Amino acid sequence: MTAVGVAGQGAEQDFSSRLLESSQTLSYDPSTEIDWDAPLPADQYGLNPEWSTLYGTPLWDELTEQQRITLTRHEVCSIMSTGIWFEMILQQMILRDQYVQDPANSEFQFALTEVADECRHSIMFARICQKLEVPAYFPSRVVIELARGLKSLAGGEVAYGAGLVAEEVLDVMQRDWMRGENVLDIVRTSSKIHVVEESRHMKFAREEIKEHMQGVGRIKRHLSATVISIAAYVIVNALVSPKVYAAVGIDTERALAEVKANEHRKSLMRNASSGLMEFLDEAGLLTPPAIAFYKRVHMY
Image (cartoon, rainbow, N blue to C red):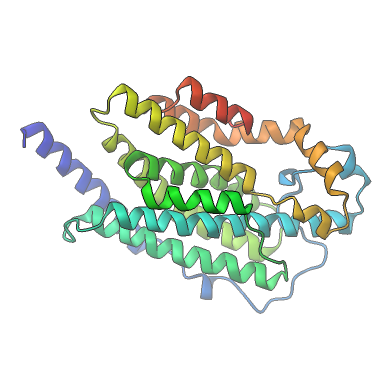
């Protein structure tokens, strides 16, 4: 190994060591941080109204206050259900990437720490949906089956890139939810926990992507960029299930049409994705075909 390679490996170990130290000093236990027995105030939203898929549409204006509250509770649980689904995929990709790696390396140890964090997050989200008495919302059967290929085959920059996409978008949403005075405390507290712990995961993912992209050829770079963008397209589309509208007595066909034309939501998504797009561009993963997919879900 060259001197440059040794130095780079040392820097990566130092970076992972700092993340490990951070996880040891600033982590949360949802089972004690969240008051699971507290009653749910009837007048509080599941997420900031501005983050509802229908906010800013004529249909939103027609809804009663109770319908708006119920809708946002179903929407936040749909997002959490999708989060559980993708966190399970991410855990498998991370474990496969770290298979038979040196367990003494801080990179290996932080990767397992991230898996442990994701397990706790998934349980936290599951308990919140159970507390709100909202059913599990899953992506379509086609998406679920296609995702089996991603979790079984994706590695390197594709695995960490797909994970980063999901984490970055949810991070921006939850930073608003944790400050929402009209949002359920159970959602605000879980958002705070997720934001703090996912910030380390995102830093780790970015470093892993940069490491894996070193010396990557043009064909592989374009292929990876496209796969990551397709994953982003699928994840964003799956966040809020169409079934949430019927669950609160809204005509699904009309709701989907108004969501599709909702300029407010499009603007939110572009703003939420701006930092991610900048990073992907710097990493060489923002190619014209990839941009086309990001534009379809208003991330670019």
